[in-house]
Amino acid sequence: MRDATYSPSPDPIGPPRDRMERTGPILVAVDGRASPVPPDDVRRLEGSLRLRFPGREAVVMVAGWEGPGVALRAPGTAGDAPPPGRPPPPTLTGGGIPGPESTMGALLREMDRRGAAAAALLSGDVRDATRDWLGALLAPLLDEGFDYACPAYLRHKAEATLNTGVVYPLTRALYGWRLRQPLGGEAALSLPLARKLLSDPDWRRDPAQAGSDAWVVAKVLTGAARACQSWLGAWPGASGPREDASLALGRVLGLVFREAERHAERWQRVEGSRPVVTFGAPGALDGEVPRVSVDRLVATFQLGQRELGAVWGLVLPPASLLALSRAAALPAASFRLDDVLWARIVYDFAVAHYTRVVERRQLLRSLTPLYLGWVASFLNEAGALGAGAAEERVEALCTAFEREKRYLISRWRWPDTFNP
Image (cartoon, rainbow, N blue to C red; front, top):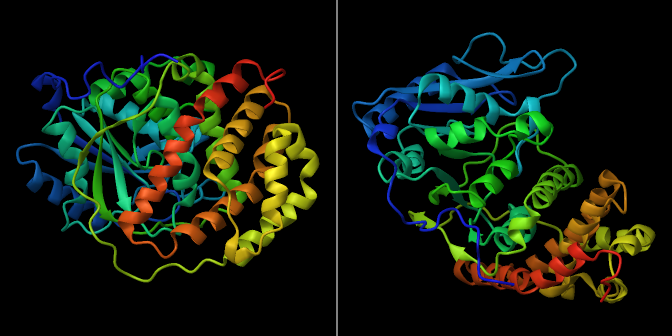
């Protein structure tokens, strides 16, 4: 493999955009389909933005249903409730909602119509308007000329494990940039990037996939946008119903794997990874640590190992199947999945998704016990570690994904013949 060829910019710290592209209003879209967004909260948020960015118009709108799709409206207006028979979207654990139900599509159209210099997409929680969390997300675009800002939140080790164990190391290894929480359902975008995304042919040729977080992040990290990330403090929690682990895994990884197929020619020429420009710092995390039953996670893994062997045998090579069989014999307290083994498992499932060796929904559902086994292994190793040491543990996992990328490339290019 050659050195990284495709990157967010030939110089990610390069010259900012022309000032004329940064003088329009600020637009904020709050996804109000899962729970109502109080108008008073919206007005307070607009006021805080006008104080933070004086002389600039700030407009906060709420995403609501409009026929089969989504539109942005003033808070409290008709259309915020789902059509009859359509449940509200789940709490987003990553990946976003693509296609006609995408809030991103509505936001891009409204940005273009208004000529908004920058816009932020929020997952549904307005939060405390007295804190500068939203200003910290938008400032890199309005003051520093970045095109894309990804929020990062401080969370307990037992939270956001789908991002920690799969999405972050996989996205980092594929595209070569260390975007710590790439698929959180939120982002800030510049007007040039919005118009570029809005004109992308995927809205016509692949409407079921366009508009998700995974789609936007892949476009940003393989294009010419100047990307950064902003630490916004502790995760405030999510509104709306929580999503079942199997459903979340299938939805998110279905989107991520599809983008890997779309950009395969590019990521196969990327080696290693580089940090993105980061604003702020994680800070300290207070509050009660979530309790997770490792025994239950391991039991689910062991059940999957007994009942899904036929499916896993179509996806994983014999060496991995043997390692999983040995892991299933371990007691819960000492259960471990090696980083290299886990990276190869994720890569094998990405290849199987690409080659359709198993029906895709069945394939992704069958990954659930493996993923829960990895969560148990991670909690056994990192549960007693402090924040810094736990992050070093995540860094070691990401390094394993980067080292094993040659394995992914070989399997991707020769899925029928490369079988280590």
